[in-house]
Image 1 (cartoon, protein in one colour):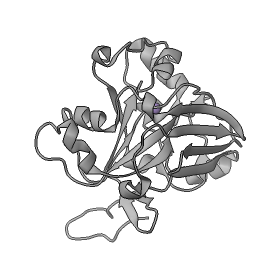
Image 2 (cartoon, rainbow, N blue to C red; image 1 turned 45 degrees about the vertical axis):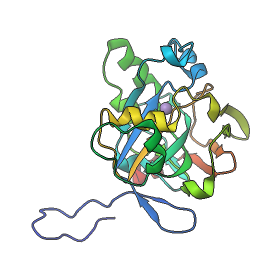
Image 3 (cartoon, rainbow, N blue to C red; image 1 turned 30 degrees about the horizontal axis):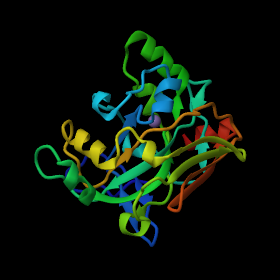
Image 4 (spheres, protein in one colour; image 1 turned 90 degrees about the horizontal axis):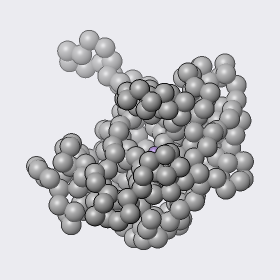
Length: 249
Ligand code: MN
């Protein structure tokens, strides 16, 4: 799991997390940005007010997960410190180049996109609710180990236009979440433009684009299947053996 120790490093360098790419190769992950409240129906189910028009949408909500939160295998250990693990199915965008200095114009954003896939922004909803109630940060609710299961990346040229493709999540074969990407409050170029006001976007960055309504609890033993219509599918199970989960953890 660790690279060889080199030069003056006092420990072995941690391995760089990688997402497999359709057609071969890996995508090394630098950072994971996430968008909150990017579908009106989900904003409402979380008790927030959804904007009535583009002019009223304000600025997006962003948070981050560590790069090594990604899970590329088919088993997710049920996390510690929660009894309300929630699924959030999301479009994931992979950044393939470094943004120029300054704010990235919306019309130049698409050129930075390497590809797309589907992922889940797993959430300790009980910890998030407690943090929100006290006005505290969301980090322990969102940025925990194994909190970002992710499918195979599909290069943008191969994926084609996102348009109004369907995003879906089934748990134990029951449809839990579904939405059309045309219903995103902020589309991909708009989100990259907004992120560039706050951070220097670099090759290796992933952006989880926000979830539609229908978020709910996952239990140990549950099987999930997330799909981004015509592009990618993500399947796996929530680990139901606590001892095995601890070993993975
Ligand atoms: Mn989310």
